[in-house]
Amino acid sequence: MRRLRLLALALLTVGIGACLDTTAPEWATVESATYDPSLGVDLSNSTATDVGVYYRDITVGTGAVLTAGQEAYYYYRGFLSSGIPFDSLQPPNPPFAFTPGNLQVLQAFEIGMQGMRVGGRRQILIPPNLAYGMNDLRDNSGNVIIPGNSVLVFDVQLVDASGGTGGTQ
Image 1: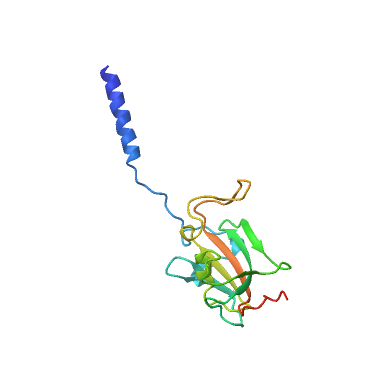
Image 2: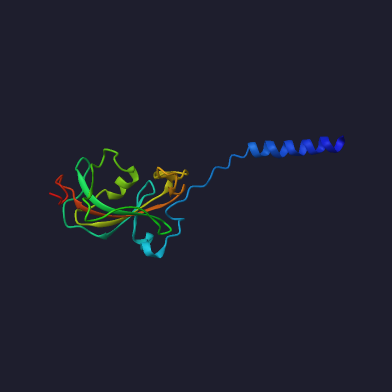
């Protein structure tokens, strides 16, 4: 009987200890991520924002600077830091249109595009706490598109920021 009580006390202690464990999962960061070499990530030549988004102009555009409230048209490719693509919009499709400040895209994506010039190409790195968090993003069939706690890498080409048609007239 005494052994049973000791065993019950030991199990109770372990159970209570497990319930009191307040260790939250640790967020991945842009700085701690490992990047596939095919992505060409270069943090030392990237600009870090105060919220943790990084960006680097691959080609500086010569056109107008993107500003809030101005409709912009762009092409993009989205990758996990492992180099696996998860989304893309490229020619000959019409470019994607959005208006900065209207929350049509991830706010971190907008932050990464601030100050970009038309004709430019930019790499934007977004930490998971500013993207999809710890939860998996799934398609309609339940397949994981973006695993939880993923750093996202975008390659963006701004084709128009004049409020025009993005060259698709």
